[in-house]
Amino acid sequence: MSIFPVLELEPVVQVNDKTRLDALKSFVSQDTAVVISDVQIDPTGSAGFISVAQDKVLDWSYGASGTFAPKLRITLSSGASAQIVSSISILSATQDHLFSTDADLVLHEADITKYVRDGRATFKDMHRRAQNVIVKWLDKEGYVSSAGAVFSKADIVNVEEVRQWAIYTTLRLIFESLSNAVDDIFWEKSKRYKGLEVEWRSKALLRLDVDGDGTADNEEGIDPKYGSVFRR
Image 1 (cartoon, one colour):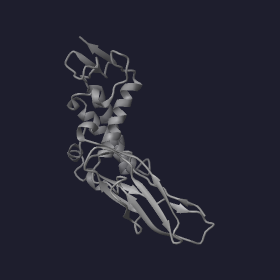
Image 2 (cartoon, helix red, strand yellow):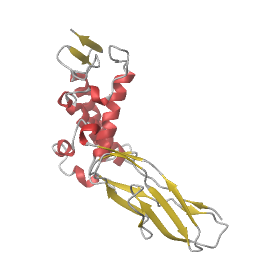
Image 3 (cartoon, helix red, strand yellow):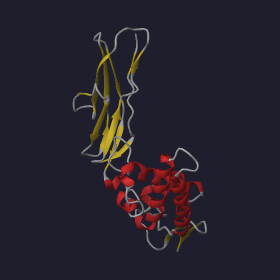
């Protein structure tokens, strides 16, 4: 007889954002007649176990930043149990440094929030994906600091300079995730926002922290349209 606890979660979440701890894929081996009698999740690793036997998921919101160690315990009708420990990073809004917001999306798609996936209350996860796409694009194109380091999200000091790029990237990612056919309405929307994403990427003139002093000014940055880093 073997017990296999499986806890799925988002690796990074912002403070006070709703997230889901999902134990639905937990199972026991087929060589036993006993069944799962209880599923318990401790969302922080120290808050105490909460029984979620019926739905096997726990929706939670972390009120402080830090790294937490959620625990999952599976108990069988025989009394046997097994437990696993996972990890989740909770960031403050400042640490997360997202480039766009749900309010930005609503200006383009009034009913966009109805597509927020189960277990979440916002699209902060998609804004974070868009942020990663933008930072990875800078890396792919070979932009580096004066010390040769890859730029991070923190180097984009003024998010207003990248906001439109981020908005259209986020919308493109959302509609790509909703599409299940190459010619459905979601696919068409994703293509339209991809075009706007590329357009606004070419318009960006980003004042980045090129020299690593923690600030950026008009004398240092990148111009994606011309593929150049400028320092005056």
